[in-house]
Length: 289
Image (cartoon, rainbow, N blue to C red; front, side):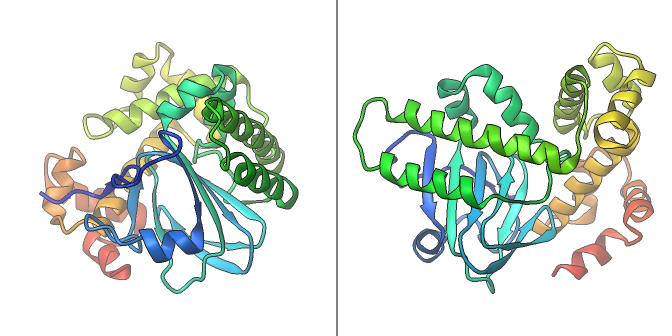
């Protein structure tokens, strides 16, 4: 059975720092984007975190089937688990910084990781941030430090990234006008992780509320406070997103996708999908073919 491609770090590259890479986009696209297991120009799921920085021109970049127009000095963070695709008609000029969850936990402070997780929560994040000064500082310092062979290099790079991402998180919070109690965010993140793990087993919000030891009413309050939607609507939105990912990125039949998503009958999936998208799964697949 063919599944959505999940991309880890480049297997054949000798890495200067384990679980971390820093790419010039022009070089990456011309030299490295020739994998045998997936097309970089079709949606593929990331198994790491990324920072996409555009230094000149304008590009279209596709993240979870939405086209984002990025221009000079724009930065976009891509979360582990998201799907993205390069636009083959765009001329990418800039940099891509990628690092794994293991890198974060080994070299970054836990308090920093907690804030970064807010930034990489793609249900909260702004689509893009224009960040010219801090982008230039980050790129210059990374380029300089990566020339060294210091035994402390991973710690130094992690410190540089920590400062940049914490500042980016502050700017993102300001732009999104997010003012959410940290306790709400903790509950929401636990709920989100459970949904991502178990959505094919249950779409019942009451089950998730029980799993994180709060009432169904409280879970709805949390979701409304954080993402301005009910817990049920959040679950439905996530299931639809996964359905889109499978429809576009695989050749699986609608029946196979229905079973993967946890529907007992394909007709139930068809009705569910059409209710939310106003298109059948086949019609949606054709729109992006």
